[in-house]
Length: 276
Image (cartoon, rainbow, N blue to C red; front, side, top):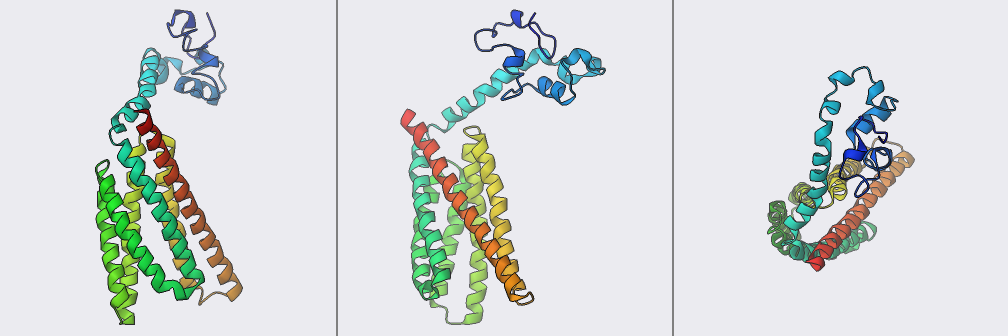
């Protein structure tokens, strides 16, 4: 009998030699293995379950016969997820690519505006046009995931607020509108990030998890930037400048990651669409 973690006989398994090189070289291996029993044994420094004093009460060991079936079921999940999204793949590929280029323009104009204040009006107009186009893209993507449609509606509200901002002469009211736009943008981006994560669920779980994590980093770095701007009046100039620079760099990194993830997401669905 080949040595296994749980004591099963590899020679009696139909998978051995065909899809599996053996327990400790296959599903139970330290690198890339997906056997919970193997992980348990390694974490407790056991060569097998036989040397564990609680093996008679172990739920993992008692369910060892069901492990191959559950492993096969997990292996089928990405295939089923791809099949589920195959019909929506062309829409996702086309409009996610559109979103990618719109985000590049939006990020570029935002940073140009911060470097050259005279471009504020031009930036508002360009961002307004991008927001309208983004509404169309998100609405189209809503056929694949409803969160996109929610983000589309909020983006349209942002466009309307930006339009009002162009014609409002009252400074106090303009500041209020800017704050309202920031809040609406946060909510719109939340639904976008959530939608990206949802359409990737099962298709690419790693990238799906990265989208969820990136949202937390996005709101964290942006809030840090706002907080440091408010604290700049109370802190020494050098310290305030360093904190603002750190927050700005952090936000820039998040925006770059957003573009990378968006490109990868679009590429995944381009590949699914082309394989159909």
